Length: 414
Ligand SMILES: [Zn+2]
Image (cartoon, rainbow, N blue to C red; front, side):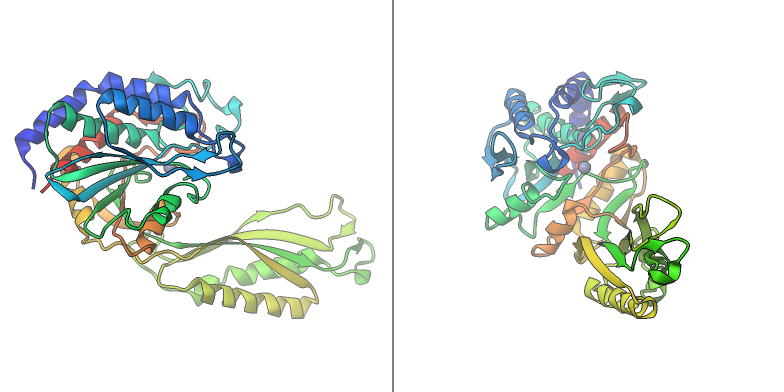
């Protein structure tokens, strides 16, 4: 429930911020914040600019959770929270967005300089404008409307700005959660607007577990005309691939929360073996991306894979090493009935006039860690045109304003 007159007032205020929101987007895009794993120097310059702007916009009450990181020149990976006190001082609604971006990739694929954001046909183009600045700026101006209208929100508002989301979150949200006793409490409404769909109808409450593996098969290299003198690693690995795709049959459960509803086991990357046709490859490397329903334990999946591998080793007299690139057992899903889900559904209905639904995704977000730790309910939601990490990443200005109104509506709900 919310006061319709107050919401109207706040919505009109948000509309009046259109140009200011675009301007902040452009200013933020001009300060690239790339983590050291991606070859960048971190987020501090962007965080400093952001904080300066927040102070100018009327925000107070900042708390900092800086992580130390020698890999960046400042030595700091910044994380901070700004709070607006609500009628209820001890219950918080969190909007968590990340400051870091991924590198632009091949510049020739961009129509313009990725760090000089610009508006064209109602969209802002530039690296970071969608992921995650669209909702960062939306959350800031949603809260600013309360400052300017001198309205006290129902819950206290916490806007969190974190580092390191694109690489591991170890210096970002995970650091924040581990550095303090109680960042969150079970009564908090926690929203991570970092994923969604173009309609704005998907509220993500569950994730599949992620298991990324590489298989190095070792046989014996020899001349192509005398295969009997060696042991063809490529042949053994090819048999292994065909056995591994059958994991689907060993883990067949399906859950309509997800799309696709089943676990997936896909061979993906294949490394080059020999450079010429007349050599029998003595070594072969391929990798696999598995997304497994939360109800399965990844230990059981690994055990099944090891069994398949041993059978191939025996049959083809090769050695196979398995290396793990990602092993993330997903958390228990947030209930589709959690208060944060209902609150979002009401806000989305009010602003976009659509019914939204709770669903699962196959990718890992920071929400998984929040769910895992003490089982806090968290909803991942954004109306997004899904151009994150792409060349010509862009954000419709109307999404930025509409999402701001969704956040503002949440702030008004009793
Ligand atoms: Zn993101």
